Length: 385
Image (cartoon, rainbow, N blue to C red; front, side, top):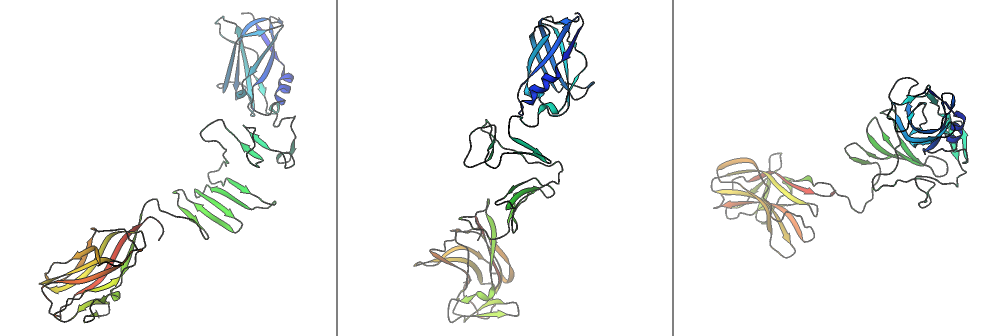
């Protein structure tokens, strides 16, 4: 192949790019000489974009096989990926069309500066100022990738996709605070931001921080919260304890004593009566009872103790919900629990609930201590109670 040289029309190149502010394909023209005379014919032309004037690997490549050169002029349309606002160097190589010969590099790489890319469209009313550019007087609409306005918006971004579409607000530092703000009347009305230092998303109102969401999705609301319904993702366990001093005898002939200074209720009555003692139980409507736990004491080998949860309907006899029973074995003191629950869902509309301590067996001498020192009921809720 004979020696070739090319002269790039940089002034034409600059003017062509200045007319387009967006990343779009643009025209590139070059002048090709073959042995000192304007070249003509078919040539394979390759354009490579580099970060450096020498060496390196091309960041973009475009090939144009069988390009027509007429009186030394070759014109191609480079893809929009070549329209990079950073400083780049372009290298042009050619070979005879269809020859299969290696490409011949034409002269040195040519620098493409950021200036020709035109930061703004020269045909549009953008106004540069010290810290950026402005557009319009408050009545114009800026839309990116779409032409239809939504509602009364003045800025919008569109995408031809059924997946994510939008934009990121970013900082270079990991502790940065990218934010989106709102202003009504010119002042700061509200804003929300991501706190890179704490990995929290925060909404700030004029009175201060209103909502904080941490990286585990735990949400803190500072102030009153009004909602039609609030619920937990998974049921939460709650407990209610029944004080010993709340127990009262079911039979007027029986009395309840509180032994010592600890408030242990003792069931004491005459030998012919085995009256239970009961205490009210308050549970939230809709809760699910999961466990009954109690600490008991008995002093008999012929009788046993029973602690039970009962529910009583409007016109029905008490129905057992859960119960614990001791075995007669002389003096015994210990904790008992059960997770066997009947009708576990609390229905405060049609039932009341209470805890009852009763004595079973074949009589009672009347001077034996029967006591309950602790009763706890576990339940779950699916919403704040």
